[in-house]
Image (cartoon, helix red, strand yellow):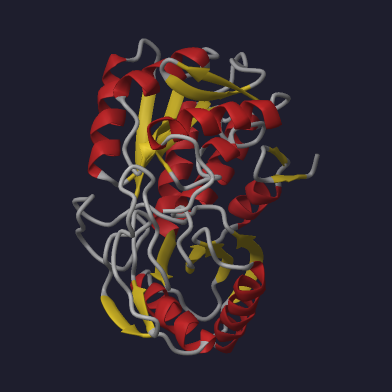
Length: 330
């Protein structure tokens, strides 16, 4: 195993120290328990938007802490849920008197620990669970569909609403609307290596890819021959379009995501193919995001996410955001 680390047991804490050093103007890192909080928290009268999950998916979630997105993120060990104590601490540190909304990816540990935290927190807390992965119904980590790329879009849109002063009930309703309108699917060309394991999480031949892979290296729908970029994009896009379903006349946000080890050259190539396939179906891509925003360590691969847009979602997506990983309008 070759990685830029000192000790597999301290890799998350060491990375958090680097994040603090790089972005002290935007966030503050607390270490016991580990919580990343926006630098000006708590913001009086504002609903706190809080998320989290296992590390190894950077920039999710800590990279999205800042104005217009998350108030706090709870980083667990690599591919492992944060504890309820972390979430309770995040709620306490961001309590501006308007309550907190927890954004939870649908993984068993995340759901249990965030639910427990919501019960233990002293302020009013509500939670939503995102399950946008169309690849499989159940997996090693979940009961039901996994929460994947749609999480980034959800955090941005709901974060913008909270920044504008929307109350807790409104933020929750908006979040549920986004969850109902977003679908994702991914593929892997190579496996990733978890630092404390030291070996690849699965095996793929030189000419194979895994369709429907999860962000922890979980198996997907099938292992198939790695074809052309056009074949890969179609293998992801077709199941997404059929699932909601999306139809001619829809307005969408297309998010082409890299899994950590995929060059932007290849992501832009894939994105262009996806845009053309959607145009051929009469679906209008009104907003776009391309890049490695929810990753799986160094995995080579990509995921596609489609969000059916309405006017309010477009406005909130365009609203200013200032975080380490996303920033515009500032």
